[in-house]
Length: 304
Image: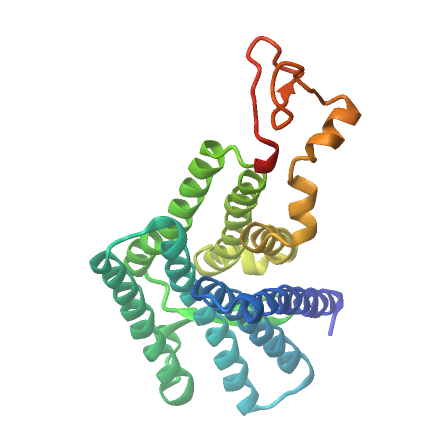
């Protein structure tokens, strides 16, 4: 075991722990609200968490346990990890569709069945190859040279890439666009900040994972370059596991302490701080913004 292996074990452990922490936050929100939206969000977070744990486990097993059967176990774990990440796109779409996209039943069915069929078909070939056929042409085994670890992907096929890429990218792009539109269209400070977190979190979360798995799968020299392969896993950890998960959690759940931070101050506090000036001619239920004296805005206190 060299220093690169140690780093990958550390980064894998930290990634798994980070996902477990944020998933526990989401689960707590689900048990409190018990809504379909919080359930779908929990499934999305949990699938990523399971994938990270499987990948980390395979790295530990491959490092510390040797044997002919161990190879099959690590191949099974790393490919199952890839599947959880792949199906996370379906979970993200179903969740986003319920709250933002609102596609009709036919579009939802076509997307879910199409993505699931293509992924499951390639997965069946890979699993059969791992446990019985042993044909290296039926899957793609990536050897991470520096840490002396390996990962399994479906067969490197540009036809599969050409089909799955639009299916995988489209839900994230649509969610980002819809969240930006809502953020720009609302005047509520909490909603504005929440949807800002949502589109930023989706971007960081999706970018980190798609860059990591896509580049390892199709860009061969990445796995053989110690700096690049270390950098891409570090990139995933920082942007997907930390920043992306944190922003998605804050955007979709918005804990009370953050609501209080972004909510406008009470009318009397704003008057005392000099942020607004009470209008003498108006009723006690309104105020005027100082920063726009040409167009005074009368806002009911009860709406704040």
